[in-house]
Image (cartoon, rainbow, N blue to C red):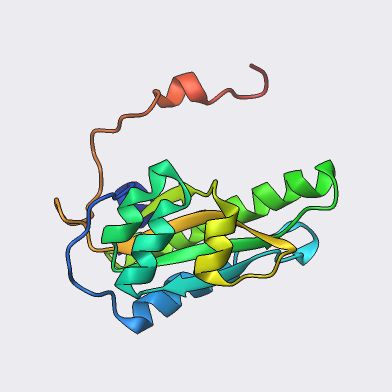
Length: 171
């Protein structure tokens, strides 16, 4: 798929088939996150790839909006260091967003669906994933093949019109 088509085909997927995602595809998705830009080349992320069904089920319990993780072929837990201050917290969230989006576009390019979720229960997340005490689970990205229909360019967007969103020069 071309980059522009992958951007237009990407959507949040919450139900997945039972088909496993090949290791090569998972590695490519993870590498896209690793290559994402970050402030001062900080690269504040670590990614924990989960493919075990029992572990996916436990990971799905870190937030009420993460139930889709249990039915995914895999999940990518995006773990980060605890920020030292408000400035670092802002940079961290921006950088993690860049890495997350890079992975969703790379997945779409491969025809693989993704769904993102936050994480509220950090104690459960730490128990499931084993990350250090000075880190936290920022987001979970479920990964798999969409159960409803394959990814394809979305022609009818559920988005605000272009001319309403884009302002040139001034508001």
